[in-house]
Image 1 (cartoon, rainbow, N blue to C red):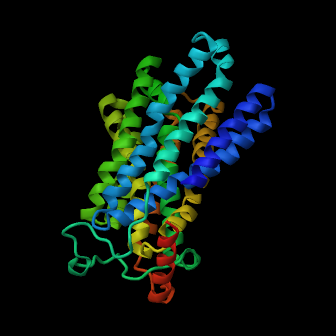
Image 2 (image 1 turned 45 degrees about the horizontal axis):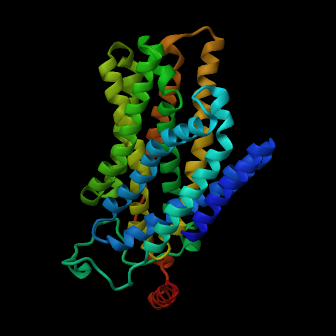
Image 3 (image 1 turned 90 degrees about the vertical axis):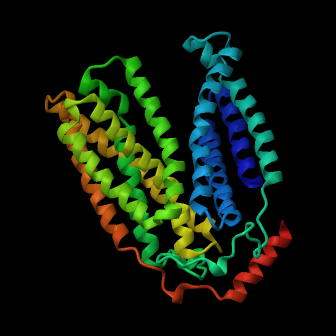
Length: 370
């Protein structure tokens, strides 16, 4: 957490220097590269730690943490706008631009205080710690849960890791298929106002955040693999419904897209617990970090696919729902492939497990450092 906070805050300060001096490369370096590294580390650290504190409810724990990550934008975005207006002397674009530098500096200071407080509180539990009333020896093992521990070095050599990489990549790509053009899409389908379209985008944000907690929590009971079958299988059906019938009913369109986005959020929140089930808690944070390259790749592929389809449709003279229908069918195919990849996931072979004495020794060393 200290490393995450340091990178994140330094990134803000470097970006503010870039804005003040008119050097765009400093903004990219600070906010994009250094801040991005801090964001990635800060995203993973609390998630992996919480799973160790809640061995009986890992889905609930990761859902809470990742819901907080998604919900942060609901606070940071309006706060940033208010600070820019305050420092710039008004809400007009030129005033907001004038308030950028002090806003970045102020946010950097605020984040430094908040993250330092979090780093002071967060601790890894003792390896033998369990919640009150929870006895791991009496818990009935689920089919996809391993009793061993796999290092990140061995995890990336397993077919399970790469199958889950494909699953996460396609689930995120499909979610971006809605998010990327949510406002113009609903306007093209139903001709509603820009304000109403903005309300639709806000509703999707709530669905995204709520899905992270609700669906991840249900995975503690249904099983991670079963939940992903729902995200991908039902998601594919809903995309098909939107493509074929969504233009005829705004209620059907909003309901289907809201559930799709909740599955998108749920996929983010469920994947750490899925990794814990397959690879154990030993280096689940590092494994999670490696798997999140799928998120990065989908962040490039998703908008590229959607925008390419829309641009091709516009060039062909299409308008309204016809602009987006081909993209919907592409997302149906992506989710079907992801569904198949998830079906193929099996428990990890014992040949990839670490020796128990090695795991215990490294955990004891980590505990001493804390």
